[in-house]
Amino acid sequence: MITRDIPIRVRYYETDCMGFVHHSNYVRYYETARTEMLRELGMTYPELEAQGIMLPVIDVQSRYVSPAFDDDLLTVRVTLTEMPKVKMRFDYEVFRENGERINTGSVTLAFMNAATKRACRAPGSFLERLKPYF
Image (cartoon, rainbow, N blue to C red; front, top):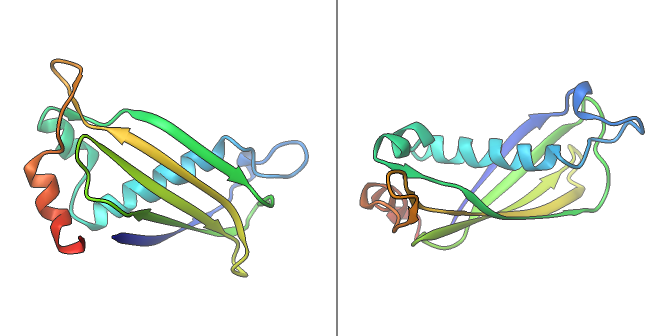
């Protein structure tokens, strides 16, 4: 299992007319955390794309517990609990600076061959970098 905590500062333009972070931004926070986790592990989307692998999102879940506001410092905890095969699921928890959990969610991505647009297995080089954590 791999878990990383990624800090994200809420920007004014991410809020709605009630002053809450608009719900659509949580998916962006998830993506930022996931991308940073992969980068910390030595993997990037451009590297996978250069190998002919795409990672389309096939499922998103999000549960809103309490709102976040402009200038809040959030921590997005991203966790990968299983070694990927054809799909990989990331789980998320979003915390306010005081430790209050305000959101939970998950995103499932599929490995896709860029040329054929068909599902494929996770590349060996990708799995090798994850092995120490599983």
